[in-house]
Image 1 (cartoon, rainbow, N blue to C red):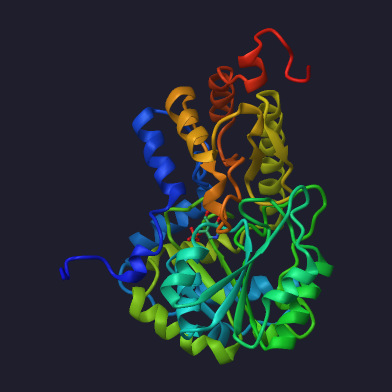
Image 2: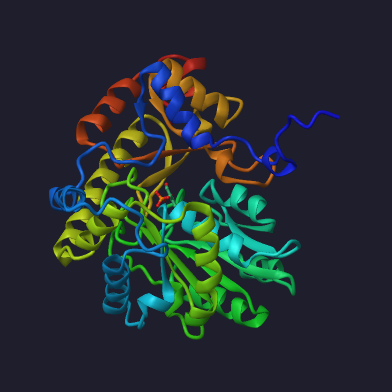
Length: 400
Ligand SMILES: Cc1ncc(COP(=O)(O)O)c(C=O)c1O
């Protein structure tokens, strides 16, 4: 038998559909509302801090688990805003983006046979993360329109083998912000079964309509069983910098740091210095960020609804999950390909956020971390879209 093949692990997942949509978009010259990266500039102050760090010759390996200035800023910021004391030397590990922070955490805590509870729809990476770390995923569905979970279903997903639950709040792709009662229920199950909460909070500052972000680490009894994951990418519009981090209980930090060390040695040194400057921005920066995204959210909601999408209004993060049933396509992938190729707008097929067979086939995710002009151009191109009822009987209104 040929040995010139990928590993069994590598055959168990496909290439990222989100990144594939970006590539297709480039081929067809579309408007990219698929992959979640801003097309507007990052804050000048932090770009200056990065250039200054390079000029000051901070160009060699940083401390493996993170430059002291950044780790101190991360700990100070979390303690100040959430009232939970974090000790940088014992709890903070800086990684190459929250992507690596999640992977290092899972590889550090999972043994073969361990189960991990994952809410679906989920951020695409969590599936391969589970496979690569050897975890057996147990999916629990968040149901529209509010993306709530059934508490019976959640408790049935936990057992003696449950090592962890992956949480993402504010949530990609749904925009759900987990409420206090939901976090309490998750916390109670973690405590009952001795499980760890791995909480991806990368959109914590992008939150709307009076919703509040609550880190599950602050729920009673969860500080010593939560790994909080965050990063610079979304809050400071620097997805290409690749700086993220974990805040872990001291009992888990050593394992996470060892895995991180042998995966990447360390995150980019000058950009970590800039990260420390970023975390020092005033509270007004975060208020403005959320308000600017609220305006973009409302603009894209209006555009999509006008073009016959059914939208689930997000309360956090920068994505809108939509229902595409009105267009009468066989499934989400066929519609997404039509949208990028013939209409010129890229979005992400819903099935890439689900594991359960058939789930997500009527859904499509759009992102709105884009300039007004980009959203307007998407609007202009989508004028081509016609709901199936109108295609069958031209001239009738969709509601007829
Ligand atoms: C929920 C979630 N976590 C993590 C990431 C990746 O973050 P990073 O750029 O820090 O690796 C993304 C990017 O879209 C995301 O949506």
